[in-house]
Amino acid sequence: MSDPVKNLRIFLLPLLLAFAAEPVFAQGTSVAFGAMQQDTSLPVEVTSDNLSVDQETNIAVFTGNVLIGQGEMRLSAPRVLVVYRQDRSGIERLEATGGVTLVSGPDAAESERADYSIADGVIVMSGNVLLDQGLNALSSDRMTVQLNDGTAQMSGRVKTIIQPGGGN
Image (cartoon, rainbow, N blue to C red; front, side, top):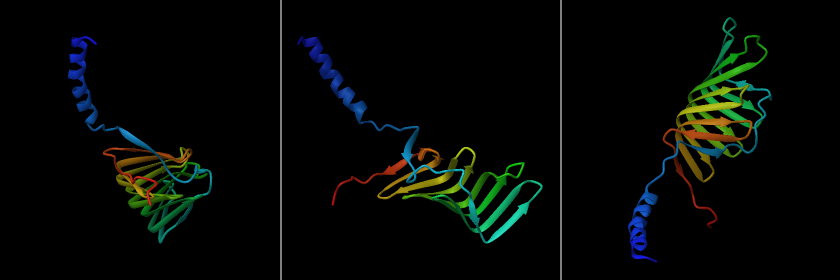
C-alpha cells in the first residue's frame, strides 16, 4: 500500500468514528401495538356516569368514569365527545380528553387526549404520550395507532427505555 493511501486512511478513520459516535434522532418511531389487529366494525360500548345528547348537532358527551370497549380494546377518560354520522347510522369519531388510557392486549398507553376515527381505524393520542409494553416504555408528544394492522407511529421528542432481554 502506498504512503498517500495509508495516510488518507489514517486521517479518515478517526473522522468516520467521530461521526458514527454522534446520536441519531429519528423523525418518528414505529412500534407494534396490541395483541392483534382490531376489528373496527365491532360495536362500540360506552359506559359513563353522565350523558348529554344534542340531536341537532349529532353529538353526545359522556362524562365521569367513561369506559369505551370495542373488541379487545379499552379506552377510558373523564370526558368523551361522540360525533355521530349525519344520517345517524353510526359513530363517525370519538374525542377523549382529560387524561386518556388506551389498552389493547398487553399494551397500554396514556395521553392527555385521544381522537378515534372509526371509519379509518386510526387513534391519534397527543400530549405526554406514554406507551407501556411490559418491561419497555416509550414516550412522545404524539402516537398514531393504526388499528387495522396493529402498529403505531410515535413522533415528537421520542424517548425509550429498553430492557435487555434474556437475563434471569
